[in-house]
Length: 568
Image (cartoon, rainbow, N blue to C red; front, side, top):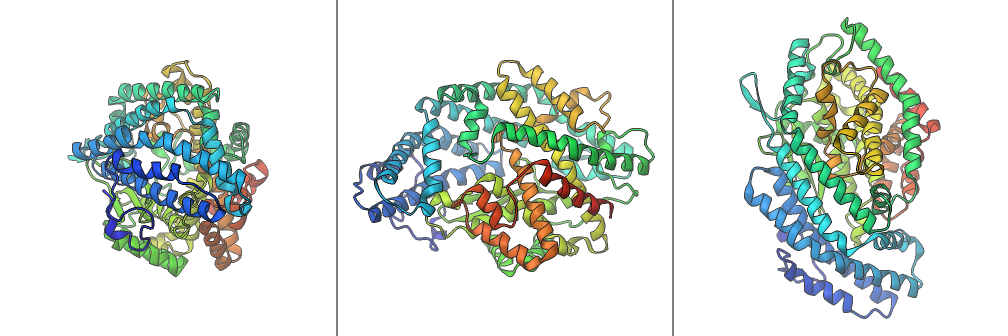
């Protein structure tokens, strides 16, 4: 599925130009050659690493292309089968070879006096990954990926009939901002009821995933899946206890701030209690912001913003558009959500989302644009691992771009820009408690294996009461108990959510820097992006002008600054 005609910027130096890995047999000979190749000097080691990176780039791009294609049309059996073929019959075979090649890398690191600054991050990563590698986990990982594909198929084909039209769940979002409370309530009930139709199926998928993931952790002598994933994600700079402390800080600092906003909202709307369909409507009764109607308008507006943040960023976005690397509009059969992926051989970012004409869509494209700029900024590093980056800092790139775009969002909002800005910061403040809920549930799930799916739902309800006490869910208990089904990270990216909270603090620091000196803040941001994954996490934050810290001491002043924007 790779378009080798588009790789001329980075021509192959090791593989034949016509080599394509649509079967494992097509790739195996090259992994065998790398493992057998003698390495006698540092120069031979560096050449070996370049060839290793090129090989993995081509291999990974085959899988990425198939996965992207499957999310673009979850109702296409050919695309589904092509991706399943990769995760079942191609990808599993590479893992034992990766283990052996990492061992060879480690042996070379121990044998040669290599530049520490260049190789220390990769060395630490290789040793950690190999420490938890177990061949018996490969079929479990395949089964877990198959279950993830099932989740995508179930949610990607969800649609409802609403106001005489068939719509995706995403296309209902604008109605939750309707000034008519009855419309908002109906919308909420229609959307949540649609998820409830598949609740038993989704419960079953997740229950199977929990057992598979726990078995992987036991096989790797990690005790539980939380410990396993902290190693798999290379979380060298913080611990599970740090995450729990972050949750506690959010409860002390952010929950009272959100409750204050909720009281203001309740008073402005003249309500005795806030229901879940009252959270996004304009408190002054104004109609929802409709910043664009067509995908072309969305692209043109964001192009204008990126041009103004920095001309080189604008040029990158224009290139992505020209190269067909944007799939932005919601449609039937398309997987929900949004993401940025990279075709590793072309070193070309791809942005996927489900735009329906809301301000959230603008934020999403700015966000995924930040990820794309990150991938582009480090694309010239010949080492594949360094073209990928710690996920905690990946989200600084995306959320930081949302903040750096703020001076230029009039391209969409015109006279309504101040209103949009307040909503932007309101959503940031309100995000932290929800993030703590999502992360907190995962800490519970994987340290209480065997409690059963109903106990997991009980814990979600408890977390909701702890972090969202301002919302009245009376009579909506079935919706609440299954509300976590709508967060794909539980199914597709376990334990990947705390990063959004850590990174949001980094992004807010980029924003406060930009208020003092915009050009300098953009320069620091871009310098940090260019490092990719080549430096440790605290150094990436420092390069961007931020502290890698998520204690109350860092959290409180940033929330105070955001609250000033909301009420200003």
